[in-house]
Amino acid sequence: MPINQSIINKFKSNRLGIVADALVNLSMKDEFESLSFDGSMHFIIDFIEDHKRMKKAEKLRLNANLPFCCSVISEFDFNTQPNISKLEVELLVKSDWRKLTQHQILAGSLGDNKLELGSAIANAVIDVGNSAQAFTIKKLLLDLRVSFSRDQFKDKLAELNKLHLLLISDWQLCSLPLEDIPLLSLLIDSRKYPFLIMTNLTQSDWLIDIELSKLPASIQHLITKHCRVWDVNEPSGQKLH
Image (cartoon, rainbow, N blue to C red; front, top):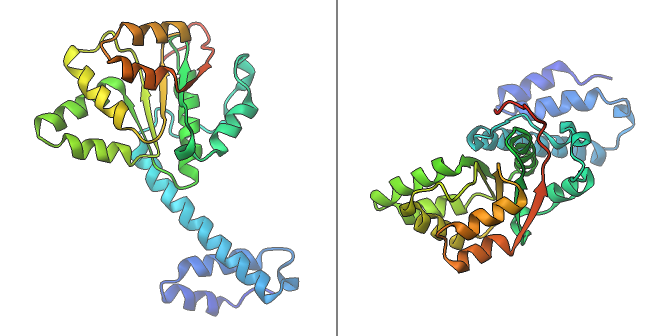
């Protein structure tokens, strides 16, 4: 038997629209009439919690500035990735990002697949209510430089370090201005959680790039000795996002 519409309207008029929606969805379940009171209450509570989680994820995603905002692991084409196991990526995104001990590096030639996969990983982190934000390395360093000039550098570092997942794309250090290296070093040294780095360099070239940079040896060690490099295949002639 459907729930009386007047009851639904009373919930809505008392600013309990989410409860009204839960009741409507509950009444549409095949097993509705056979559910116990406790079973009905559990359904309503789960519905409300899922709704809150989705609303929080929507807000986090809006602020994340992901290169591919709708990318998800289930739709990523792993058939084009001979060096990447879908199962391993799924295990990665199910992990608590804050407890991971390795930076995750998506390396490979020029192309969009790294950005798409990185965005999918970030979306999985966002879906469980954790924050993420994407920057190109030049935009990230510009923000750090501006904050430093305004005597707000510590606040900026604190803001970035609150993010569960910090994505950095277009990683290539040898082309950076020398004055940016100390700022990047301070960010790496202060970072509590692992980075997700996307670079248009192969794994070997990525390591060489860091070795040839002016990063202090201790900072190079933090990046290169505690990382996992994913070899992403980029189809030839692929257009960049």
